[in-house]
Image (cartoon, rainbow, N blue to C red; front, top):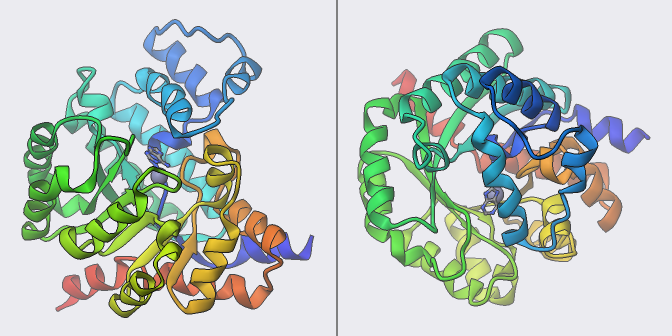
Amino acid sequence: TDLTAFAHGLPKAELHLHLEGTLEPELKFALAAKNGIELDQKTVDDVKASYDFTDLTSFLAVYYPAMQVLQTADDFHDLAWEYLQRAKAQGVVHVEMFFDPQAHTSRGVPFAEVITGYRRAAVRAQDELGISAELILCFLRDFSAEYAMATLMEALPYKAWIVGVGLDSDERGNPPEKFAAVFARARAEGFFLTMHCDIDQVGSIDNIRTVLEDIQVDRIDHGTNIVEDPALVDAAIAKGIGFTTCPVSNSFVTDQMKSEEIVSLLRKGARVMVNSDDPAYFGGYVGDNYVALAEQAGLTATDLVQLAINSFEASWLTARRREAFV
Ligand code: ADE
Ligand code: ZN
């Protein structure tokens, strides 16, 4: 339709994208064959049949085991490069991509393999696709704070390749304050900060308050439950906090896109935008997410333009570029 063409063609930044969540079944089989790994599933349809998610936990139970096929810098490069080409086809001109180094170091893959492969794809995206691509290091919140701090130390030699740090994986029992010291150190090292505050977690409004007031993040990933506390919404808007929402992902892990919450934030003037999260698993890249939200919530082309403007305003592009040129 016209709306689809418009949504896909709109220049946009993608700010909530897990590189490990872009592993399409075809690449999974190719890497398994290359690395001599035997997979339980034999066909692309088998793999897709296992994508039966009802919540975040059931998604993560599929997401982590699939990563065993990623072994070398070339594999990480190939994963990111395939994503970047798909993103280009859906109008992405700037992307800040999450990666989960502990999902690899915890199974014996060196940090250097992970980051050098991803970085090579990011540089190639600039050269060959005209996309500026940055990396955000995400700590896995179900591992210890000590392991997160050790990962941050391991990343410092690669600081120039990492724009910010984030926090993902299972929020239950792993509140933001567990990582307060890690994020304080990351801020002191000059990284921008973001954290997942997943929707529909028990106590999520308290976690949102903690990340805004105590951790002092620059953005919140998901975080749409903030609408429960209008005063907190006003405070977030005053600070220019970005909200990186993911409607198609929401519809898998919660049964709903959370379109009312997203549109409420949009109408109030919050820096909310739309992203794809784990597109290979949830079946929609970023342009598809714009279309899905627009159809669900009856958004106009003007609304989609505002979401795209918000994506740049909430990005860390300007600050980074400014530093590079002064
Ligand atoms: N890891 C990958 N995708 C995630 C998500 N949406 N929430 C938490 N952890 C994740
Ligand atoms: Zn996410």
